[in-house]
Amino acid sequence: MPTPRKTQLRKPFQKARRVDPRPITGRESARDLLEHAFGAYVGRQVRTAHELMRRSIAEDCSIFLTLSGAMTPAGLHQSCLIP
Figure 1 (tube, helix red, strand yellow):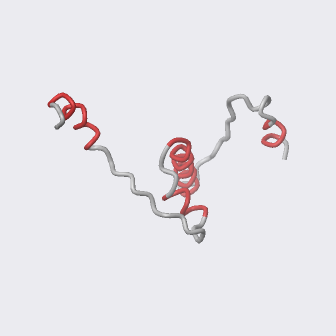
Figure 2 (cartoon, one colour):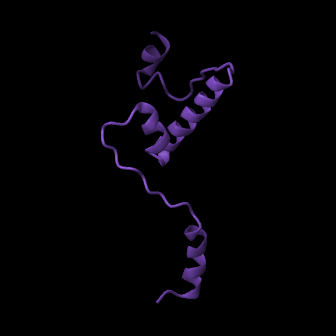
Figure 3 (cartoon, one colour):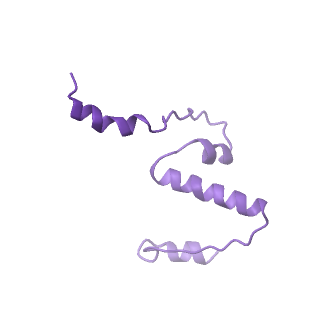
């Protein structure tokens, strides 16, 4: 039987949104995957970036690309900056 202390610690987590991802069938478009799959970790960051880009394009905003991190040691400096 849970102690009152354990019950108190558990309450904030019970209010969290339930994560119930759709299964991936292989018929999804890239947009479907970005909007409905991979809701955690880096996938969530990619989803947020997709939403910001989509809204920026819809509102005809200027879009700038910035790069950060260790791109040269990873060999990404040529592939990302030189088409």
